[in-house]
Length: 271
View 1 (cartoon, rainbow, N blue to C red):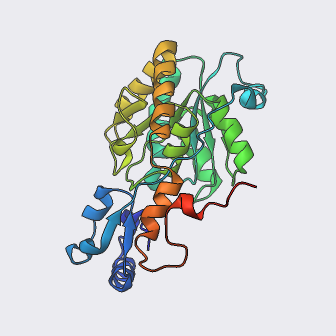
View 2: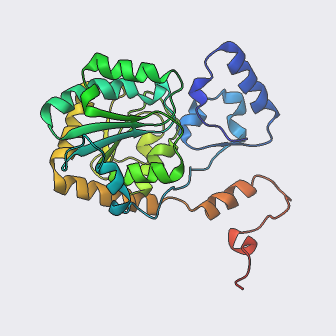
View 3: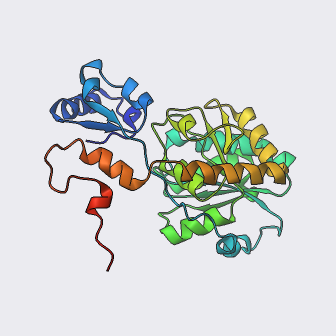
């Protein structure tokens, strides 16, 4: 059993269901020590921490994002701040939109791109932008995004803003790092395990609108800093455990399972 977003199990029926699943599981995988700390002490001895693997290590091809940047209404030198993924309250979109009001006032070329399927009505996202007075400086694609389109948006963007209120670990953060993009996030859950302030991105406390705005402005305004953080993002992703290594760690939880052995042993022989 693998755990993700444990913090969402707040209601007593949800907590009870999770506890019963944990009690029946022979082994449990968590991505971070912080996830383990959230669990009932009675089940922690069966939990193994196996990190989340890397995504998108091929890196971003700038040419792939040309179609995004050529959209009507975007200045030629627009700086794009991208928020992407499933849009749920704990991912901090409201905090980002509030912060972006200050970013827009200080960076005339900054634009916010929001891409992903909302958990609630898309009208709520548009209302949030209107409430903050930034609808003219935002572009939205509020739908499920095919991978090719998501990679185009990542290639076009200058910084990924993923200011979670809560997290265990984030696949979106890992994809952004793998694409060589600076990540603006928060010290929520396991995110500081992969986003290192000043190395591959920037971190603030969850809900810190002013700090979020200040750090985004700093990244957008400094080409040298942005390039250094981008290089750090790629290096971080390259240093994460490979999926083969993660597969070996996971298989080790199943003694005597079919196909046990190293990933190299399971790989087909060259033709």
